Length: 137
Image (cartoon, rainbow, N blue to C red):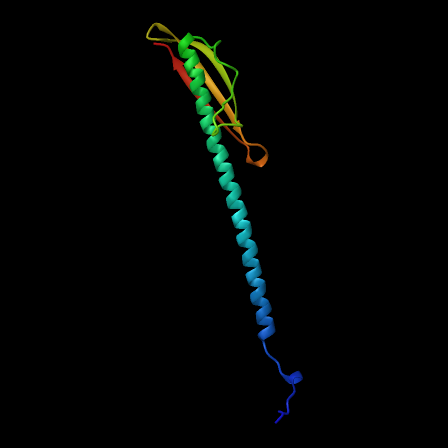
């Protein structure tokens, strides 16, 4: 009933193959986890970048509105804060440089409004700038 060969004399590739498959699967899981993490960080930075761009555009609109009301750069605020939830936590600084330009023997007042915005902090911080030229008619 008992075969002559005992279990000690048996050989096979089952254990090394199983270890190899487990190792490969573990490496795949680690690689997918790292890919998921970097994708999440990229999306977060993209959102902050869009928020900073919209904050810079909104700041530029505030600056242009002030220049058009008064025809000078003195009324442009140095900073703008937003109370809306989408731009909350973003900081915007404005600057205005006045110049006079002569076109076809006529002098025009031209203002260069620059809006620099920053949203987020640490590795998720994004900065954007928008520059607008305003000319009186």
